[in-house]
Amino acid sequence: MQVHLIFPKRGNRKSGINKTNLIGKERIFDMKLSVIDVSEHQGNIDWKKVRSAGVSGAMIRTGYGVSSPNQVDKQFYNNLSGCKIVGMPYGFYHYSYAMDVAGTEQEADFCLELIAGTAPQYPVAFDMEENTQAALGKAVCTDMAIAFCNKIRAAGYTPMLYTNLNWATNYIDMTRIDAAGIDVWMAQYNIQCDYKGAHTMWQYSSKAVIDGITANTADMNWCYKDYTNGSAFIPTPKPKPSYDTYTVMAGDTLSDIAAKFGTTYQELAAINGIEDPNMIHVGQIIKLKGHEISTPQGGTTYTVQAGDTLSGIAAKYGTTYQELAVLNGISDPNIIHVGQVLLVSQNSSSHTYYVQAGDSLWGIAQSQLGDGTRYQEIKALNGLSDDTIYPGQALQLP
Image: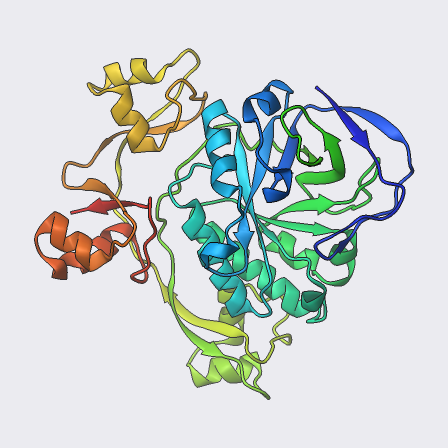
């Protein structure tokens, strides 16, 4: 594929990130894994034309900040639908305004609410680049990034941090990001990426002219990791720890907190992903202990082989391709991929209910099981640590 890029002569400022000054030349890049990232700034996109232009994937902005209707990106649903219709692999990114760990966790909840029931092949990225956040210092910014990404991972998605050279050098501890197993999406508008650390995606231009995008130019990326190998997945609730927490006060040390709660500072450091036990911060939320919540197996699975079709797999297991599509969240039954794991049957002891707007666990238990007090069984079956559910979420019912 050929993408026509026009590099700006002067640094371009976008939402708080300082873009690198570039040579005022036009260049042509031949791309293999070419990924665009899009938001309302690109307007209405003709995704069929974008797909035909050879773009390999898209990172879609969900929104920004915490849960509110006016915080959803105005083109989020259109972009998501367009990608699904044309079979464009996609991921997400969420723009942050948070000023502490608790705020980023609320932003993660909002992001997860928006993407519930989707099947992204690419990661879900945390985009933190406000100057007010930079003023918090490297340790706090890193805590915030890890907190967001931990929530994304706990929901079954691949977490990613979007950052740039300035932030990676001065405001984010990239050693901690690597240790936390978070993929990195590095922004540097240049003919080469000068970041020497591990990164799976490089945003190299905001000036890509792509057929199908007419309202503005697009951000263009090289992706070095084939996230689509194995194709889309529907995140299923994983066993996840349920924690008691403690909020750090002035004068606290990790060893003092450990002594108060009958544990060790090493254990607290491990639970909270703290690399340096001497570095904790007033207002930081410390998880104290956790226990695993077991989740029963969901049923029989099948791994897609070369030459398989959804209808052929359905015939093997005595079902229909429509039922398999619903069961696996597949929007286009004609698109499945070698290595993709499909759920072909569920345990007879349970069935699936898809959460509707306005639903509550008690209400679902009442309407589906005839007894609202059985909502605790639904929580246990799905490994839910609280009563939070989202429209489109698939719940197993007893």
